[in-house]
Figure 1: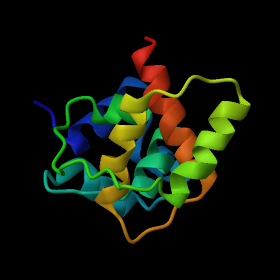
Figure 2: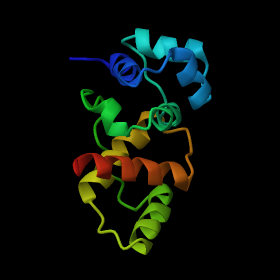
Figure 3: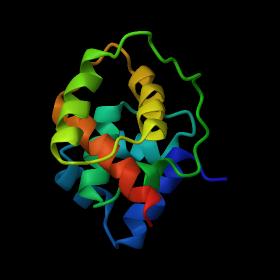
Length: 135
């Protein structure tokens, strides 16, 4: 089974993209990308993954497809603030909410819980997961 770094490298090389090109397109350093690709213990933030998948024109599920969740899902009693804006946006787009995707997002959210992401990040995450199930 491939680890996260191997999957990033595979997607990058499938596209014929060099590490320096990915660094330039993602706005991340070559050193960080090299570390992610070569260190099995890499645990990049959601923001870093977001930059990588955008540069690769991929989805989060493309990168995470072989990863096992390492955290238990934590569903709070009250809807968290980060989710309220997302739900409002999705409903405004006439989308039917997929509770499985929202639940999966709790795992992603808790990976780097101290970091606050904006609504654009959460839209990207939801839509990336959603599009991966429609393949």
